[in-house]
Image (tube, rainbow, N blue to C red; front, side, top):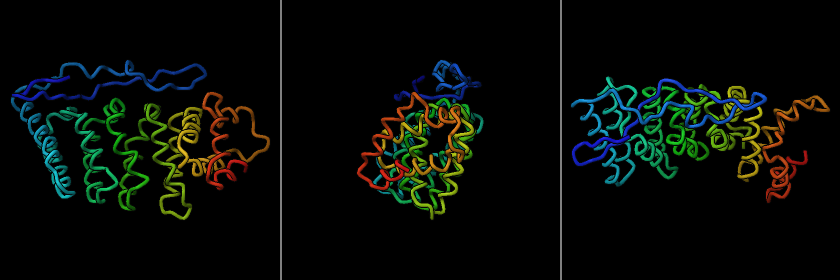
Length: 288
């Protein structure tokens, strides 16, 4: 929704007050549809000069990004944005121009920028999530994932640590409401399993295990196999994860086979892609 403020049109969003999860037959949850959430296109209870000033200040900061020339400018603008948000605690669920805010934060997560910008951007994400709550995050996953997910694989050590904390504290608690972006979430995390000696290997493995439990096992492995099929750079860590999670008993019980190798997930095309992958290690892991 948008409202006119002076010569500018300002869009805004307010966190809805409930969410629901449709469930498919056999207990497999589907991705929540837009109709399962209250429409954000409802009239905000906020009005008056205070809220108008809030909108104007947010818009001024966002427009200043067009004039940023180096990484120090980005840090300064992110800090200014946090100051504006904290100046208006009486509007806890409202974030003016949220789509533009998401685009600017994604811009600040560009791997080409120094880690100081990334850390400051993550502070802004955390502040936003504290305002809109998990309901607001679930309703606007598409806005926030574009910046947070691609960052992990190329982030510095200190940024990765903060980012995993953010994944654990904000995204895991969404449970089945993470399903709309589950494949992207797995694509972000799987590179953390590339090096078993890495300090993040154990944390990434635990985070993936928690994600499996808090979403749905069949939905989780369906998304995992789609990652294997679509993205060659995550095939080896994905196969290592599967080897670690497959039951040790032989033969594997039929009900477990269906869970780990969902019929609708394109498992055979994914395995075929692995067998013909240019990386010999992927081929070996597939046969194993």
